[in-house]
Every structure is written in C-alpha cells, then in structure tokens.
Image (tube, rainbow, N blue to C red):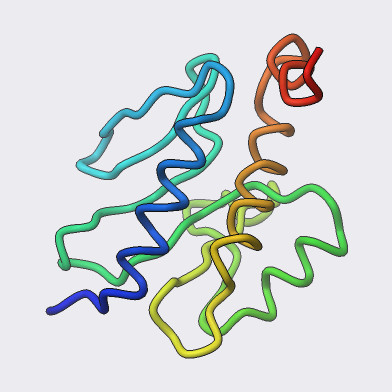
Length: 126
C-alpha cells in the first residue's frame, strides 16, 4: 500500500507541530507513534509505514470543534471506547481531508485538554 505524498507531508507537519508543544515527547507504544505530555497521550499519529491509512486521533472537548471534525471524510469517534471521551480519528488520505492548519489547531486543542496548566500557560507566552 503506497501512502499518498500529500497525506505523508501533512502527517509529518502535524507530528512536528505536536512535538513542538511544551513538554511534548514522542513514544511508540503498540508500534504506533504518539505524542505525550506529562506521560499522557494528546495525539495518536498511528503508523507511517503504509500498513494502515495515515490519520491522527485527537481529543476535542469543544462541541463545535468536535462536530466539525466528525464531518471530515472518513472521520469517526475513536475506537476502544475513546470516542465517548471526545477522541476523534481523522484520516489524512481522503479527498477533502482537513488542512495542516486545521489539524494543528485540533492537536493544540487536544494538548490543552491533556497538558497540565503550567505547560498550557507556556502557549500563551506565560
């Protein structure tokens, strides 16, 4: 399975953005790429080896943002019961998939939900 270049570029930019958040670290549980803050995942990035379609999974607490994310082609509440807690899986490959800017906004929202206050304060330049 070949990964479309545009989707891979998007994935790489989102990963780079996520890892640029204060205190963010990259880990590989279950063979997947995740970004964590304070030992908690704030974005699941899946795998980039072509074995699965590229996508990101973020936690969106804002109802409007959550509803918007679910309108993306192929988007769905995350599996393993995470969907009930506000996690949304968004594929990057379908036509009409969200832009890097939108995805990064969602990653930041997810980060703000998970990260401790002292780190989110750094985002405001505090």
